[in-house]
Amino acid sequence: MLITDFSYFYPINFFTKSSMLLQQIALTLLPGVGNVTGKKLIAYCGGVEAVFKQKREALEKIPGIGEKLINSILNHFVFRQAEKEIAFIEKNNITPLFYLDKNYPELLKNCDDGPILLYYKGTASLNVSRIISIVGTRKATDYGKMICEKLVKDLAEYNVLVISGLAYGIDTCAHRSALDNHLNTIAVLGHGLDRIYPHLNRNLATKIIDHGGLLSEFMSGTLPDRENFPQRNRIIAGMADATVVIEAAKSGGALITADMANSYNREVFTIPGRIGDTWSEGCNLLIRDNKAALIQSATDIAKMMGWEKKKQNVKQHLLFVNLTPDEKKIISLMRGNGEMGIDEITLQSRLNMSKVAAALLNLEFNGIVKALPGKIYKFIG
Image 1 (cartoon, rainbow, N blue to C red):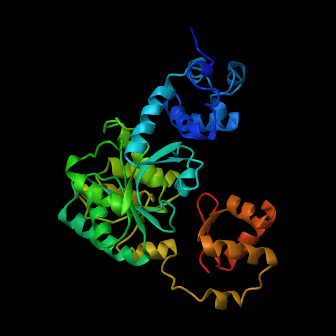
Image 2 (cartoon, one colour):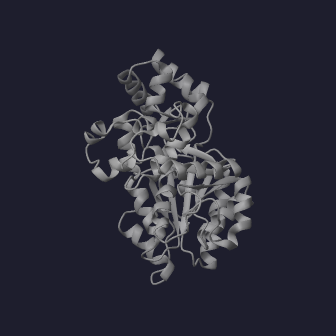
Image 3 (tube, rainbow, N blue to C red):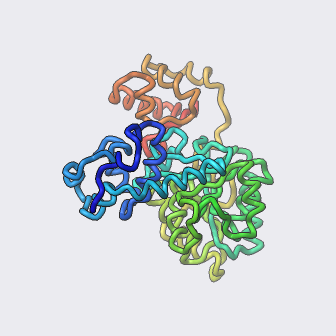
């Protein structure tokens, strides 16, 4: 018998704000619901809580939602597993990040296949102004490690957040170098937060929690299976301003991450290597195919990202620009936030979208703001 009435299993006030997390987790547990379909359900129904309150007739009208998925939505069993996950979250001080939350990685929100829900254990903000992902082979050479260490050391001047995947080789080197240079670093995992893989990186992971964080879209109990890592890689690519590839074979996870970063319209950089070297083949191919810009130093990254400019006296700079009242209002907002999406600017300024768009365009022409991917604007003064 198909059960469609939740009141038999849950109290009458089940669908309240306090149950929001339970419903968010439950949505990710529905068989056949990926991140794209899940967001479609939320959009059509008007919220995650509304998904589970819909009648069969309403669900049948949603394009691409089949009978099997409808039965899963109307079924109550996913909530049992969601309750267990909440117990794990609470016991281990893990922060769940729903894709509509303010603290969810802003750049990742602009990726259609970005996770509906992330699990985070750490201290660092995931929405700082400069984020770099560093990836590469697990079999890094001494030369590759030296380049990685030097690159991260020099990036410390720009106070970047360093993201990688906690794997052996370049990933491990990037995390350790970030910690050595007092930079926050985020390790994106291909399994649940109830374990660390590889096991030898447990001590490193503990340090990362105190100076960055561990991030995963996978629930507790999820093993580090091979198919999880390409999914993990899209998060590494999607939440960064740019991805740097240091040593990579002609196929593998680093090149997958680079391709994903390109698909998200992010910058991709790579270190060139000698012809014939196995761990330089992937980097050289990226350059040859115009999928990555060649870099030799952190200065190259800063120049291409527009970070190399010395901080100016903003007030003095603005004296030479005739600003409209709308533009002044937007600058006032952005000066305190650094980076803002156009929707957020529109909301906080109480200007209509067309006025905001026109003002931002003029400010960009005058070098006061910089347009970033996903309709995000950065105040540079």
